[in-house]
Length: 113
Image (tube, rainbow, N blue to C red; front, side):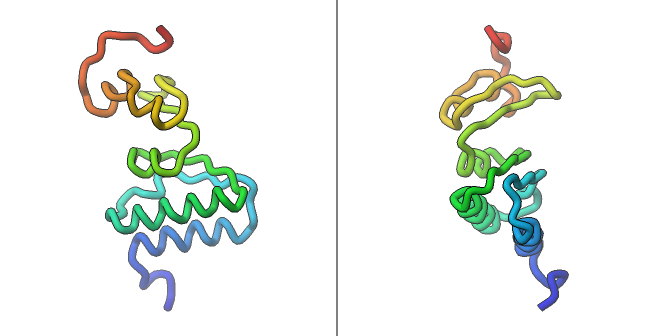
């Protein structure tokens, strides 16, 4: 079957597979979960975890926080190009600035304070 006949999620996995065929040390992905349904996101997260276990570092730019939290050791959160948080998923998940930026709630604090 030609890749053009695959679902969008399957095409994304083929693209990642093509990138991995060159045996990189670092895989850089920009919004790989965009447009995927929940089943496809689970498959993506599984593939990313397997890739990490194979010793490939991954730089992931992603807005789907479920995918980010499932596959990341360290997270850096940007808000309009400004770093507002950095740390392990559990640290970032509870950060008031992250909650404010991504949920639209007003928080009375400043980054770095």
